[in-house]
Image (cartoon, rainbow, N blue to C red):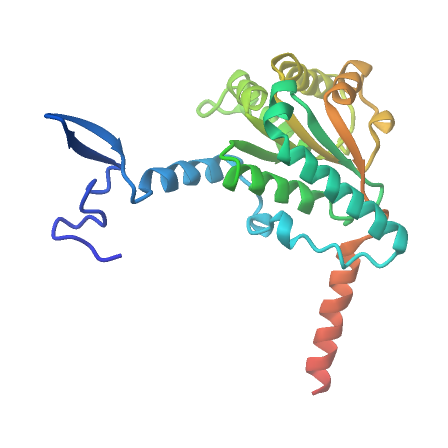
Length: 253
């Protein structure tokens, strides 16, 4: 887009996001059709989400189902995708009920995190929702860091932000070593979201019943999550295998 003589891209709103409209002898401001406001809002949502760089471009439509090789895995992932589509299609009702998702598989690299990031991007780009993405270890490390720093977010502010986020994705839930203070902080977050009916999406290597947390935590997750088991097959291994094959072809040519 060419700049105007004022240095702005949009001649109607001068890049403010609002244009002045004259109608029936009066004037009022409305959101400009150039879309700058929508782009600014989307930018803030993406910054808040903090989705890892490796997953910023993943979408449900480019989630690779064909990489699973075992027949049972193909059946499982097809059912998972169908359930996730249903959940997203009815997101207004899910939000009202505070119903999230719990994606689990004992196999690392089975696609849980990629799927969670795909869902997060779908919610941000197509549903206009705010999402916060973090591993459970990141959350706990940020809490510990808040105890030492003199500036920045306090523990109370951090817990409040995590409790109030419209959608919270907690990746790799249940891998941390259980300590009293960890259970206390996680209970605070999960219970606050339970009370306020805000959606939480978990990924884990363990089923809900296999988590070593206090039942106060696991019972709340059970009540407000649809559990979806992922294939016990590592997609990551296949990707590494394909990359090595490509390298061998280049070396042999």
